Length: 365
Image 1: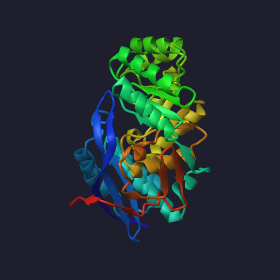
Image 2: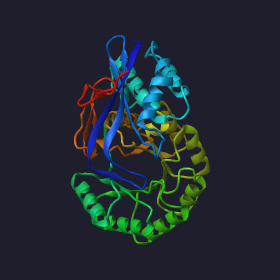
Image 3: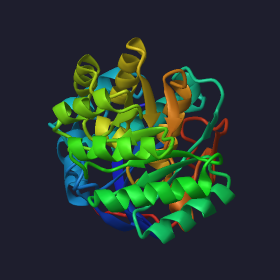
Image 4: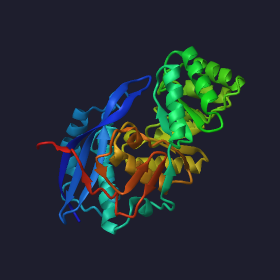
């Protein structure tokens, strides 16, 4: 089962409502889709979105990285030698984590297809059922409260609250949402690097004194400010989660050694794919640090791969943030993962189980 060809496409799926954070506002999921063809007629699927303000990747750079350095090193290679293939992907060029992730997802899909089993089983997973939170985009206090109540009514038991750069307004947002859903949903705050360390400590102390119970605060300070992240972690009761500070396994080792965070957020688009995500999960588990399985704003191909990994590493990945399919107007991808609002279940189809994609625009070349 050897790689014969690598094709690319574009897939655009509108969101039900704009996805707003401290860093950006997005109205649709737009993925570069990777299709790896084998000499026996099988196809492996991967995908990646453009997240220029986070990873630095654009659609153009993803396409160029795959067509340029990555793809030529894979043509003619045997899918059975997965470690060799992922090493080639990672060594093909520096950074470009989203391009690497898209290709790796397709490689792992084919590898599992070769053995006729769902990917999570081959990675060591058991129970193929997950429960995700849902993102509440940054907006007016009234709108965020209404969105939170609606999410709880749909069955979501955890809310990821996006916050911004107005600390006083952010405190009002959290207090109002807590008052509306207390006892019915856990609150996870995400400032997307929008606060300073001192602002974060002030905000969390204010909320804690007001009786607001939070499950975690995600990446409140800039990604490069590990000292600030450590400052916060040492001074608040609320668990602190590293996201943009934690890309690669070496980043995670440093965070753990410095005790700069309590939780690590794993995302395939940050780690460069499944191989490094597995390493991060194993490092965290070795040190007794829990993880969240998250995603950028990618569609259900990338989210499905993340779900398989989360099931496989359920002992250390204890929180799930894989809500993008629930944020979309529709899902054009037919695959082996069922996204049913808060519940994600994986079927028995080999690999990722992708059987078709509606509205996929194939790219020439």
